[in-house]
Length: 572
Ligand code: WT7
Image 1 (cartoon, protein in one colour):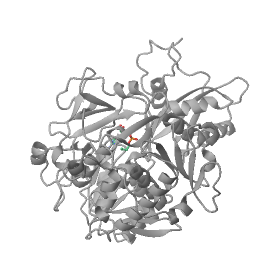
Image 2: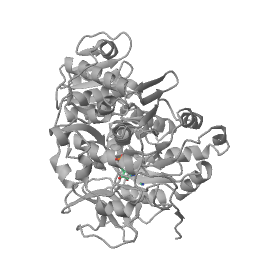
Image 3: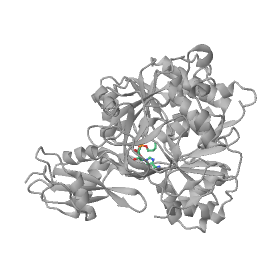
Image 4: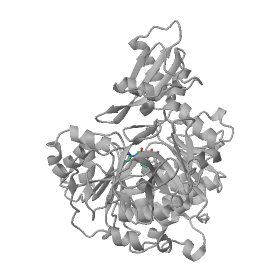
């Protein structure tokens, strides 16, 4: 296959010389930029906000532009310091202490950012939840982490099964006329009267800071714990990969319910002192181009599904907007097709830079850099200071162009430090001596560019969101008509993959379209809209191993008309 190479962009980039930097770089030099270098203690919320608010030259710079259909607001670094201090005071007054798990379950809005950073200032461990989660998904996460508090809205409150969560004793509620009974705290009223000064809880760099739940192919969602030290790599990658300078206006389109929306929707851009744009509400091409234009966005981080949706809206639309300040575009979450890269060049006159990382890695690991050539279809090269390799199942490094496990040498700064309450699961990532094994397969060419080949497990990536088939199957089995269920990702031109469910019905149920819709709605209400199967196919029986495990790879082979492979473990 012929590889298309796109030459470097022109400009003064933070990472001017990849090879030189990769050779000489030392993480210890980055650490010197943060407070623990002097005091031995740190708090990432201080480094993101207060550090700039205390700088007379920076305090009046806009830190956050927020808008949606009803709101249009802006906050300087000084405003952000005050608001996050207020939020911290509200939480501390309600008894939140260092190490407590505090979940944030609300749509994007300034209060989400105040609450999240306020909780971090108290020393709590924050657990962001995507607003579309339904009761079952909320419950399993709060239960597993023994959450003490949740910040949510009046509208979302009925998805929090308070009575079934014995550890949950405080509900911070964002809404009008909140009555403060049974552990409820009227968050906005308290916020407005709270003191705008707060004594930050100084913690160790290895203390817990954020818990992102993510899906695997088996078992319940797992809580990936990151510590304050994650900032080192978020900061450095925001500089090198996002190429952020202090006068940049940056827009990361991801929701903070997912790791991209915290690592680069909150920490990365503020650690470097840039201006951050948050746009609430739903996707529409007009709205997105309008947002880029309105804020004069210069650096934009989004995902292949979004680019493909913009692409299908047609190229005429873009001409109605002045996007001239835009200088750098990046993508993450799923394979970025060369076709989309070519579209980006045509309509923005810019390259789209693919990047690769995961919830577990905390920050960017593999990327394309503005000063380096891009090979269309490749995710780019390892971040300087981090060793990435392709290894076989025994942990031997493979030579160039051989497909294997995409692995990272253990010990990069933003590496997850635990899977909550599940040491065995955590250790399973590191079974090959010295390597973290990502679950992705890839190869690396002779120039160090990494080429994604697919997931090794059955995890589904739909519209950039990671969905575990097991969680969907479990929910399907709760439906009164379902006997067996197997869930796979089916390739889709826009969403990357869609969720397809194969279902065997219990006797006495007719396989009708109405029943399909009913089952779909059942998953949507029980888990989340993005986890509901777009396609359901009824089968009399599903392929299972003798031990009763649904064989998803056989379902996938049926779906794609591929050979089914070794069936020796399949029951008769
Ligand atoms: C999985 C991680 C933090 C990034 C957002 C998703 C897939 C990620 C790429 C890419 C192809 C990608 C991988 C990875 N993925 N980036 N550039 N090309 N696939 O985070 O939910 O933890 O999912 O997303 O399969 O393992 P996540």
